[in-house]
Image 1 (cartoon, rainbow, N blue to C red):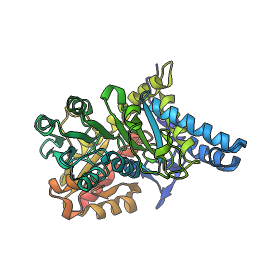
Image 2 (cartoon, helix red, strand yellow; image 1 turned 30 degrees about the vertical axis):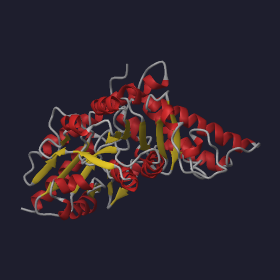
Image 3 (cartoon, helix red, strand yellow; image 1 turned 60 degrees about the horizontal axis):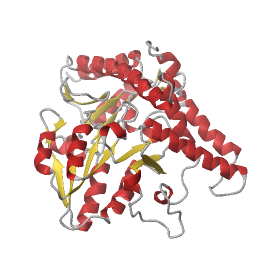
Image 4 (cartoon, rainbow, N blue to C red; image 1 turned 180 degrees about the vertical axis):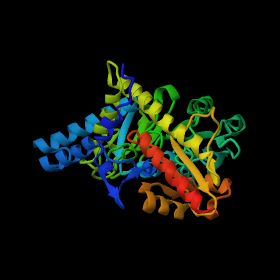
Length: 412
């Protein structure tokens, strides 16, 4: 049983961590916008590109190798999300795949049908469904955000869900404030109404294990660049749903699932990197099968990240002028810390952290537009966001806190 988090070994697998800025080693706390690349994912791309890339369906070795690598990546993604009853389609990113899926699914909707979205989401998981619904005359409802608890009011679902509900779309975790949503509770409402459940797992994937079977998820979307790999999107769709999904595609393109969703030539060099990233998480865990290794690996990652995030949140509450945006202690969260600083704009705060302390963090609404509006901060720069990844250390957390304290002290 692995009990000690191998932080030095893990950091050694991410070449970008050696970068310096203004004479100091960089602290990458910008993981929610995209993690750094694992050495094995970089190598997977290099090997594919140097050994001879090819498109599929050829009779020569490089074409067959491409097909084998894609098949392996599909199997690994199924293990990542425990999705034996789902099919995996690849694409440019989660947002594009949500829009593609929503257009296909909307062909089955009729005027008067209803869908349910939320006020917490990244708008890829709002506008993709909302615009498709508007095109079809479908009613759009929203699970409200409780601005005091910074959680979704799931108690409202009983009144929102009707026999006309065709879809509920939620995020596994907020990319902005880290709140982890009780997807299983949402799923129960969807199943009772015979509706589909779509889940945005983009922010969750580096931090927590998302089990589509246990949670009752019909469609899951994620992006590998948030998970140490290349820019590859993933749509994990229940087979029975996928088989009747009338996707828009070329007439000559394959019609079987999941190929018919993969419009045009895929990122063949990037797809093998997805497998490498999944093996990284599995390598941290134990078990007889890949699924068990992945789930136990996530537990180890969670313990490390939550320890750092807990320390940072506790310390920031002692710094005058800092306002944290976080759900209560009884609400599970990713290690993503959203805050504001009195006397300085979010953007300028990030500039100073970068130039004075070589700590990379970000500012903005991060496409969680409704969330920022509901909190009344969208017109003043929205949030400052710092996010921890598995490769971040306690020493880096300390440097981040030192930077925050120094900036706030200079503003008094």
